[in-house]
Length: 345
View 1 (tube, rainbow, N blue to C red):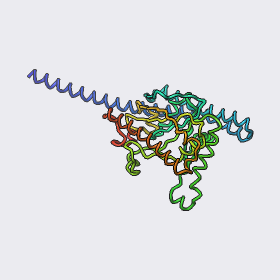
View 2: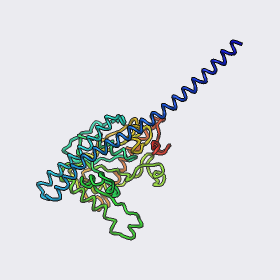
View 3: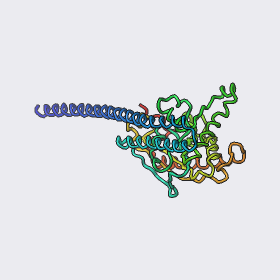
View 4: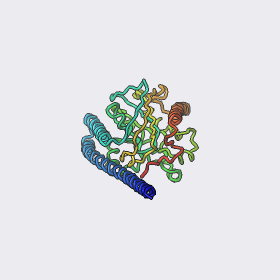
């Protein structure tokens, strides 16, 4: 009788302990979720404040450029604009570090040499808006500030759109086939915008960031595009060709970056929330073939083919690097086995 009571008592205590542990576990999960949301909100506010501060300085310099269009003055004002861009990136990098948003594990090749006095082209696989923050962060203070091809719709984003316009980022309209059929003159608009931007880039050391895939990778896009690669979309050569044409011999190195998100590709807020615990990054320096530097690649069938072959060779090496990485880390979220947006809230 006494033993039976003791067993029932022990069973009751065990069940209560289990319920208590479950409650703690659930509360812990809720607390962790609230903590991530708070970190994301705090990071967003701090980045907005940082953006507003540097935007006001950019706007002031932009106004001076409009009222003082003299070459000697414009040179100094453009240098000042580069300083403000560097300041914004430095502030954002500091915010990410203070909030410990993610651990960046970077692997450099032995030939990588950085110099803020040279011109660079950075190419990278594209999966998330977080790519841009990460690239700006790892190259901050090492090479000139990154400037990249942006969709024209970004012009309407408060502060950011105007800031990018003031900094001379080339905007792409990417008209649909239907619009091109109705207005054939739109076909050369993106090319002309890129040429104008590259002319300005040539006046002072600049780093041009080019996502060769032209869009963010998703499994759906990968299937739809009938990609020749396992973890990448097919690269596009048009923008790269124009940059290499106009910057020519000034291009010191092409920096090839490969980004891997081992916890799954985050959306922007998930990254700011600290949910992307680590990011693996490989940085490889490449020399642009001399015959392609300063050449009107897009106007020559021979050079266009040569550029496409060179880029495809590098893209194959990048794909092989990703295949090796995932083969060694089979437990990780591979882009083709789960939705690339698997960290979205």
